[in-house]
Length: 58
Picture 1 (spheres, rainbow, N blue to C red):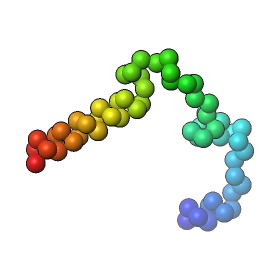
Picture 2: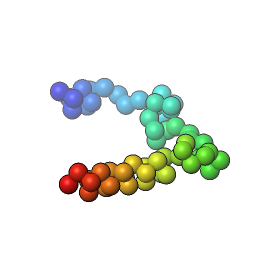
Picture 3: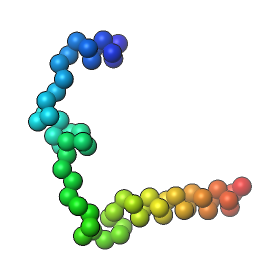
Picture 4: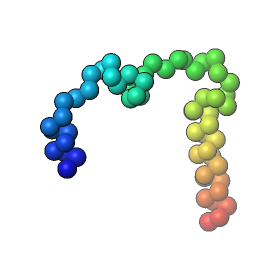
């Protein structure tokens, strides 16, 4: 059903997708943000915690 509806409807323009889809949204550089507001340091912390908990509860 999804494929049929996708083939029948016309695609949205880039202007309609702005701020709705990540690929068309402008992102400010996160250089000036503190470490706890950046996704990479937080992702590393979560990954390390998962590894530690896996070994602890193994």
